[in-house]
Length: 174
Image (cartoon, rainbow, N blue to C red; front, top):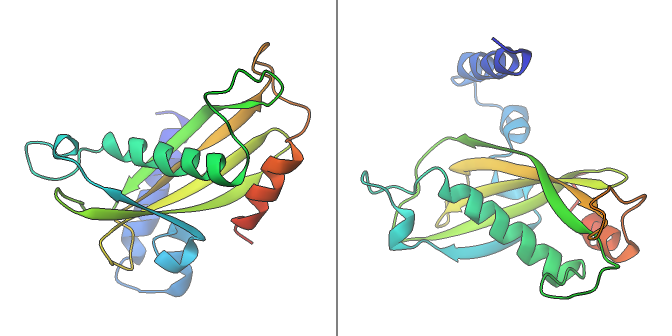
């Protein structure tokens, strides 16, 4: 088993051993609490999101992650995906993950919560919580890491643009 696999099993075992001991710190470590997030986007689930068990298919949550992250980048960081401007960097996903705690279903409105957990020299790590209706605990917590690259040569940028950094700072987990 790989070291990543062993670490994941260790994290799962640790979570299972502490499930009967509610703690504010545990909830914070898992980012399940609605209060942990700084930006929200309501998303209507679709008929095609549901699987044969009438819950949202696991792969669809990654669509939700992508939706809130890119919506935030467009509205708050100056990202213009349809532009032919080759001067602004583009974000490439280099890592992603999700932890599933409960199921969301169709039809419902989910609320995706977003925060940034880390800003690097050319990268940003996002944390996303998916909340069904007004539930205070996320049914899914995940996210991904973007490395921002030059759009022509696809090499990491030397530093993130000021406009991006200003937007990122607004929702940085401190």
